[in-house]
Image 1: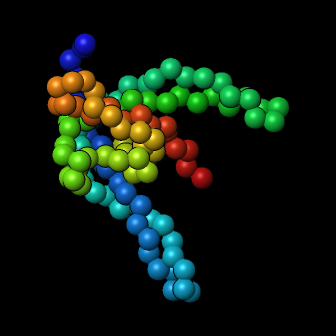
Image 2: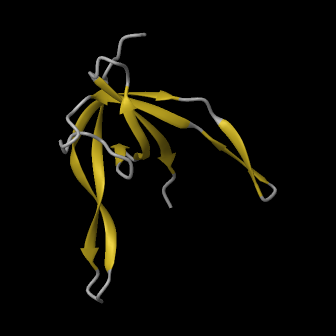
Length: 112
């Protein structure tokens, strides 16, 4: 297994409910912390959607492991931010049996 090179400083963000003043709420993203990471594209694929082909490229983001109860441990539903780029976290697992690193399977989000 090749060595991990944590060279990119990413923000870890979680969604937070904020009252909208009309009895409802709005979801906003709040930074949980900064994490050094290695970002690698995974295999891409083309997906057909009603006469349009969309190309998607998932990524694998590797970070140092943290205990399951730690705020520094990424979980599905959170996201990483790198400047204007955002990566939604789909799944998180230990990279290997040593438990030193976590691999986060993510998909880049397109801003609306």
